[in-house]
Length: 290
Image (cartoon, rainbow, N blue to C red; front, side, top):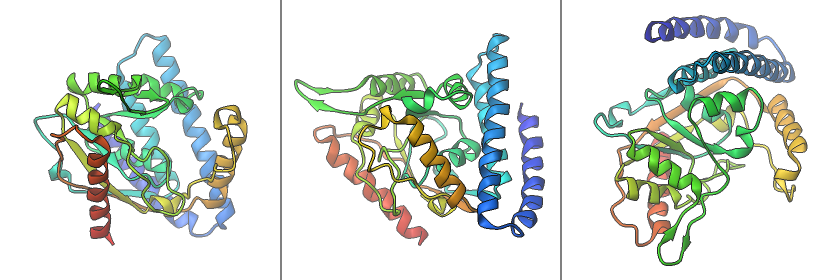
């Protein structure tokens, strides 16, 4: 699989070079339609392969994550979206970790899946997990579905099922990837960090690896769902808003990821205070990029 990975990377590079000269010659709306059709094609293609592998009882999470990684790279290349990662020397060698980043746009997930050096379990919305093809790839890759990260102070810090599951995987040696903001920003600002990530780090004794992502909001802006009162009851409307936003706003560009130094949470007396400190660390990484 290692050799196949590099063969596909070479193909992606060649395809991206060709795609750059092609896409410079087409109007923006045509580029958006191209991006949507490419996304649909690759989702159906790789999702179908994932279904077939499952039917054949090939259920290795590593195999399905490899499919997901190739899907991400090929789609980004088809839209001439390039990904650069700096600070890889900060990635821990001897211990697993919780990977976090500011949340600019949904395509940012594909940048991490496609190019981050180490495999991880991504904490994702249970709504996305229910989608055909893509949802199957994500679930088969071992990603964690979650509908909330709520913490409530009673006799102790009670946690949701998703947090408990993430802690289990962390103590089992897996890496976890989560966007602590929970939702993408509309104008590039950073929303408050959810303290659930702090509890994960403290109870698993695993460090948090902060990342700053830039450029993602320029290649694909975030749809505004603020006027929809109940998202779960309006999924068809959400889908059309997302597709419309993709077609109108998608463009080629660069997604840059800067990895900071690991942070180990040693104090759980105030999870939100520790979460605010993590936010400031990510903001510092972003300022160093500007």
